[in-house]
Image (tube, rainbow, N blue to C red; front, top):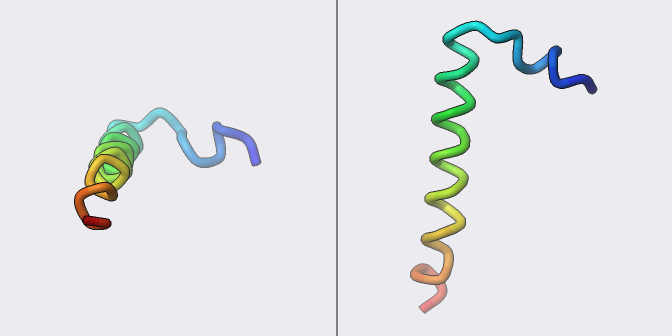
Length: 36
């Protein structure tokens, strides 16, 4: 799969990837707190 297929450069794509990345980062950071 090529990057262009999932990210066409539209503003909505940038927003979606930003939200996805922020959510994924927050989940990774909070895992140690869940495992206490």
